[in-house]
Image (cartoon, rainbow, N blue to C red; front, side):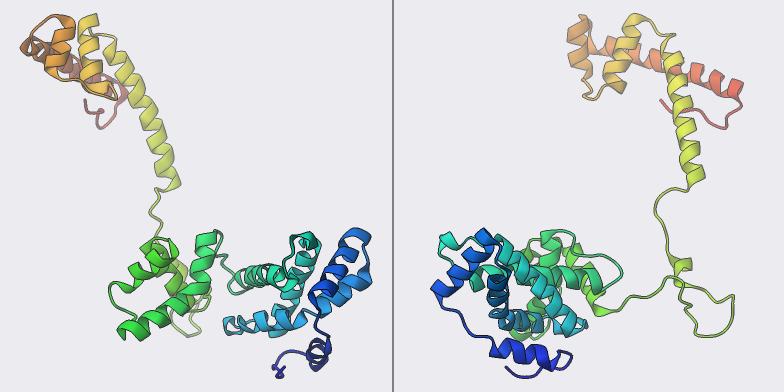
Length: 293
């Protein structure tokens, strides 16, 4: 096993010198650990697979994290695999442990690669760890990884949206930057910061409160205005203007036993009554405008 910078020589030497295990010996050690809690058996089992941990950890070195930390996290996954391994299933431990080792390392990378947490779902995690590889493959095939279809091709391959691919690509293209970092590199205390240019599309708190109050007031006005209508006028207005599924003049006319033209006349008269009532309420409340009907 070649020496890897950032990884202790003693650890490399111990991993390289650990004996390989035959299938039956591996099974016996797993049974001894699982059934009897034999820590010596656990040590032999895990020591024999540290080569696997180091090999998997080395594949994640390009994320800029210490190799020793990646190996340590991989060892945590190895121990988890040993605790969950079922020898009776006749599967080699290395095959079973590979998934747990890789999952532990990936989780560590996601938690430490950036201060902004990403990859919270399985599809996002797959996008994080496969985006660069897929972009490189597209570059080899099309000689243009920035083509219009590149993002969509990657999105289809992983099962995420195009917007997710674009966002992840922008995150992987740069490092974390403080929102309080000055845009101009000088000593001026009045220099603009990145936070100054962030725009929140949500309404301001005072606008939310104002809209809540106005909504309640408009609802009360409408309720009071509807009370002045006759029973038939109220039914027509509700079914023609306020119902979730609005009905046509002809349908409503058939229900009431009148023509659709008569329904239209009653509706128009009722709307005029409502507008007059709402106008009076506006004047009394001193509002600038009344809700439209």
